Length: 64
Figure (cartoon, rainbow, N blue to C red):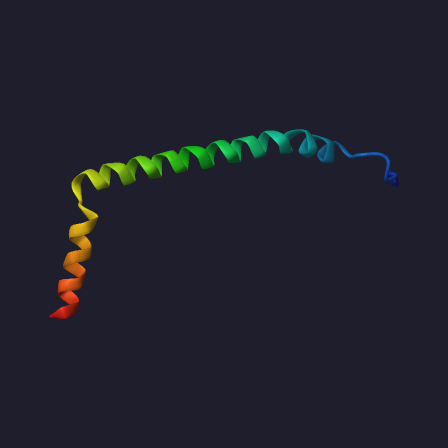
């Protein structure tokens, strides 16, 4: 039975450490794409809907 000393890293640990930076960049890229697509959808929605009219409708409905 072979026991690894703390100064030695296993193969899996070495591979995981080497790819952790790449995973962080991938997650950052996915977050940026998600944010941009959400902003784009918001802008498209605001072209068709006037938020001021929605607030007025809600206030009128609350009075009734």
